[in-house]
Amino acid sequence: MILFCDTSALMKLYAQEQHSDWTRQQVTTSSRCIVSQITWVEICAAFGLKERTGQIPASDAKAALARLRLEWPMYVRLALDTPLFNTSGELALRFGLRAYDSVQLASAQQAYLQLGQNMRFCCFDKQLNTAATSLGLPLLQL
Image (cartoon, rainbow, N blue to C red; front, side, top):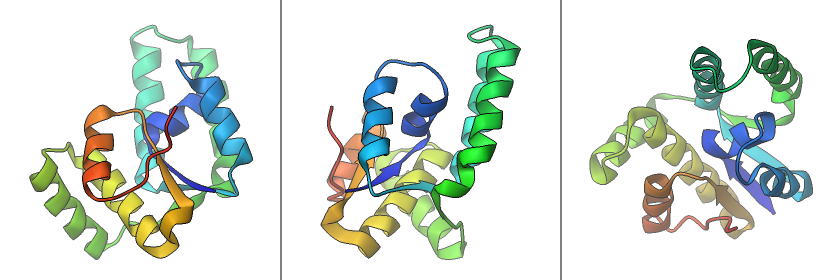
């Protein structure tokens, strides 16, 4: 199985959150893990927020980001290009998604169109999962 992980899923590999252990197991047993390049920006922003709001100590955020920097080359990263951004805009309008969520969804859709039924969308955002289901993307279920 090939996983496409959005930021909500990938974050669970670097910060201890609900379902982190389950997500780690799924990523470990998958043949590949695909992410959108936008995930880098989102994860950095998420760790910055966690640190600023006192959810995690600065040392934990720095350690997690250092680990992500080392592991980032292991992920298959989908490039951002004009057609993807055009699709993202259409998906944002169609499903009422936030900007980066629509980029995640367009990236997952692109991966699915290339890989087919062997790919699963791993995401912990209800609105994004609902939109993915509407597009026919198979979800990785808990």
